[in-house]
Length: 295
Image (cartoon, rainbow, N blue to C red; front, side, top):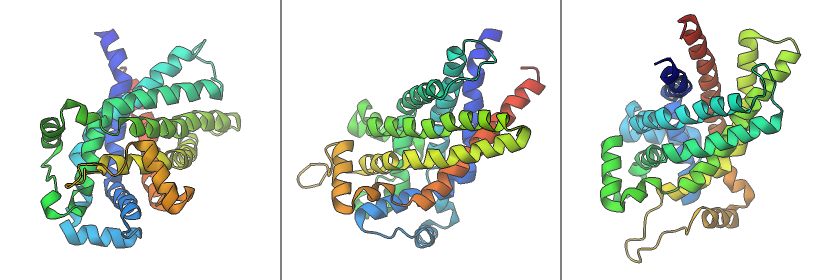
């Protein structure tokens, strides 16, 4: 029983931390997705305008559309990426007190992010489609009632493999996010510790630094992922607008230059950085709770 709890604990810790952060950040994530889709389709990219439109469409609860998919995603994706990262870093240490070099934490972060993204892709795909559905013409809307209905509909219409549409850009984005978030969080904690900064100040400072780098490195991949997961086949030709993530990125760069991949960075930063900070702070709090409970 003790071995089972030891194996499960890092994943449960990650899931709880991610779900708490998502409940706090979901409205900003909704606005972020709409801005990215607006940039690709010629719509508004002003966060205030987008927020007003969302509230006009579905009231305040419209800002929480897709929350069930978001929480499902956190259980599988964040639980896996934080849990795997803890497992990988422990395995990579030659001694429990070793301060690992940055290249080791980078390898651990990239590996954990990529594997976790594949696990969480079905929920991520459902979340993107639910958040963008009201932008489609009424006759082209999917009208998913929740994450369970989204899963069953995707399997029925696209086959089981349809749940993993966009898995490559999702995994790439997750690797970039984990590199910025977990790699730099560990690095910042070590640097702050060497400067004599400990306790809550160390946790908050490191998470703030990690939040910035997580946003900067992951946005281009997140932008492409959103376009690929949201796309639909042309009703006449049956062709998709993009052949894949690389084709999508090249077409977007051709339209608006390389900076187009960073469309909506202020909103993305406001969504990713606090989410990363809340997740990392919550993770530390949950770990402390386990210790206080003797678990």
